[in-house]
Every structure is written in C-alpha cells, then in structure tokens.
Length: 308
Image (cartoon, rainbow, N blue to C red):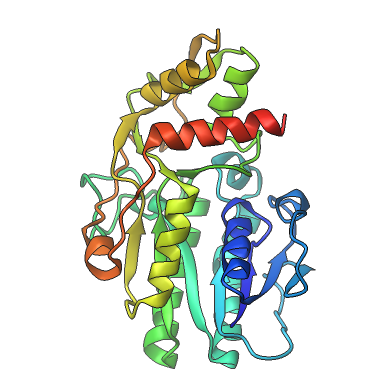
C-alpha cells in the first residue's frame, strides 16, 4: 500500500512511519517541522520512504495513488499550542479539510488523530466515547480542544456526505522514545529533570490524574482501527489511572535521582481527571494495552539516557 502521514516527523508520526515501512508499504511523510524533527526520521534508509517538508494548511498535492491518509499534523503539547494558538486552530480546521479533500480525491481511507482533550475537564469518569465533554471554547486550551472537536465534526461530515471511509482515534496520554526534552508534557519533563537531578516541577498539588500509555500499544491500536470497519471515534489509551505526583515519584525512583518535588500554580482549565473507557476498543478492535507503566518508563528513561 501507499500511505501518507501528515505530521510524520513528530513523536507518534515517526513511529507510524516505522510501522508501515516494517509492513512493506510505501510511506510519504509530510511535516513542516514546526514541532516535529528530522532527527525522528533520520534513521530511515528505505527507498520506499519519501519526506516532504510542507505545511498541510496549504493545498496538498500527491502524485499517484494513495491507500491511507493519516492526519497527525498538529501541535499536541500545551507548551506548543499555547505558543502557536492560531496555527493549532488552522491545522485542525484547514489542515483537516485539505487532508480530507485529498482522501476524497484519491479514494483513500482516512484516519484522524484526535485526542482525549475533546473531553476537556470531564464531568464523567472514566470517559466513554459517548461523552460530549466539558470544554471552554474561549479558554487558553480551547485552541487545541476545539480544533480537534471541529476536525472530528468535519471528518464525520465527509464520511456521511461524501462517503469517505474515515476513522477517528481519541488518543490519551502516550509517551516513549522520540519525545522532545522540552515537550512540556509531564513524562518527558519529569525524566529530563530527574536525570539532571533538578527539582521536578509539579503543577497544582499533584493529585490530578492521568492515564499513561506506551507508544507501541498506541501504534497497535491505530493499526487495528485502520483495519476495522468502525467509523465512529474510539478511545485508545491505558486505563491505569495515576496521579501526577505518583508518576513523578516513580520516575525519581527509577532514575535513582536526588530530585525534589516543587509545586507551582495549576494552569487554567487543566483537567482534574483523565481516564479512558476502552470497552469499545476491546469490543471493536480486540485491543487493549500490553505494556505496563513501569516497563514503559524504564524503556523511555533508557532512551533519554542514550540520547543525552
């Protein structure tokens, strides 16, 4: 098959490039390198791989057939989408429109990378796909939350009106090799600080919860979703819920760091809880996570050490 991955030089996108090349497919990686990095794909030496530096908010032209279009282009960390609010909205709206238009023209199956952030600061716990969310459209995080919510609506409109074969994945917190050290999300920040014996920065009192999954489990879930016949949104994430303080303590223990915890003001609209209900993924995709959090942390810490 021939696969286009927008945002292919990003954390998740680069692992998708590896996955599809490993299956023997041709991969076109498209990224404007605003938050992605050439270093994430520098190891790829394959004649079936093409990198195109391009902003998907512009018209997308790809010569020849396409079987899959995977739309993963977007800032995904609060530090990035708060720094790039307008681009985040544009890539969620205009970029999704461009990618869907390409799928329509090529007759390709389309996968939208959505996010657990569509649930906002949830009032239902854990969060099933049928929950509509609790999002502030004018809050600081709204630029990301609403961009993804619009992208989901647009994807379903293309599916219903144009008959495009679409998939939507709502990705919960995922970590692993190739995350940026300055990513701004909890796991890479904590690991980087712990390895340097710096204070670990915890926002709020650390009792807010997240559910952390490993990158290989996510890639398996994405592959299963693409192969399925299910068009509605599907949660992919690890339902093992833990507080951010527990995550910080685990990282300090595993790195044997001398770091201490320091607490700072909780950012605006920061979710108090986050846990995926994955019953739908189990039923429709026969998927659930296989890598436990401690094993995932050891693998990620090893990568951070080797790339220091």
